[in-house]
Amino acid sequence: MTEATLLIKKMPPELKDWLAAEALRNHRSMNKEAIHLLEEARSLRGTAAKPARDAQSIAGILQAMHALPVLDARPINEVLYNADGLPQ
Image (cartoon, rainbow, N blue to C red):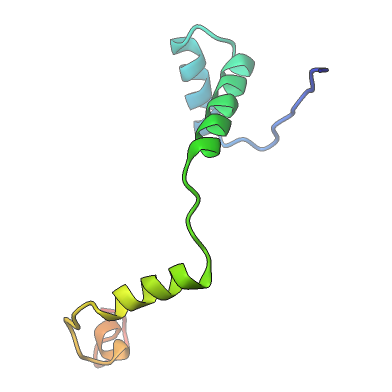
């Protein structure tokens, strides 16, 4: 396996500062810290449960949503806007 180079452009300064602080805290270079974080994210993503997106799962979600009680029967425009048409 050959190593590759990754250049990150336009990284927000606060993210760069956070990465630098994490690298310092973990006694790593910023490069090694970034690799460690990417490996950690890959591992977590690989083991995380994927949300079901099939029609039966979606139908179940909609059924549960429609079973919720109606707490405010006003039309949505009355909920969101006052008499002057301004957001409430």
